[in-house]
Length: 157
Image (tube, rainbow, N blue to C red; front, side, top):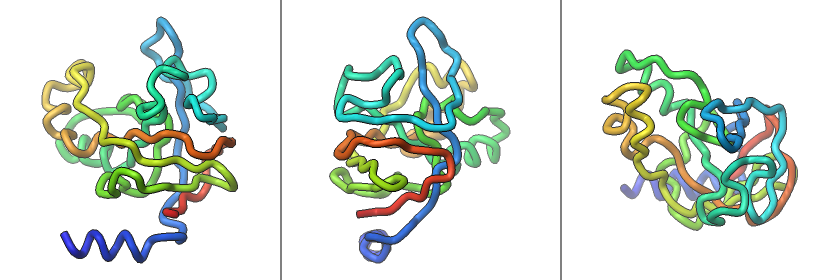
């Protein structure tokens, strides 16, 4: 556990990864919509069906690690199917609640909680919820509004 803490300290104010994909969900649709950029404000992701519902769960961030874990277990899953708004190439799942990350030039998010298990993942594969129990994603709330683009860098503050 100590090594995770010291690794986290070393990462502060350093670029740790980048945005791979961006998604929104819309009312009455199970399809995820791929976006080139998202605008986030204190109520969440603009145009997402969860906008202004629960500030502490307003943005879902997932790592490509989750998709790799599924593939390694012969589960076919496409980016976006975990329900994330932001897919990144950095694994943030061990960062403590309250950690702030900056994405791009301005947008700042604060980790509010780990993502809970979702029964809808069983529609993809019955093994998926158990496999990704602690590795599906993290929820964040918006601290500083702004745009996020595919390719933006991620910094731990």
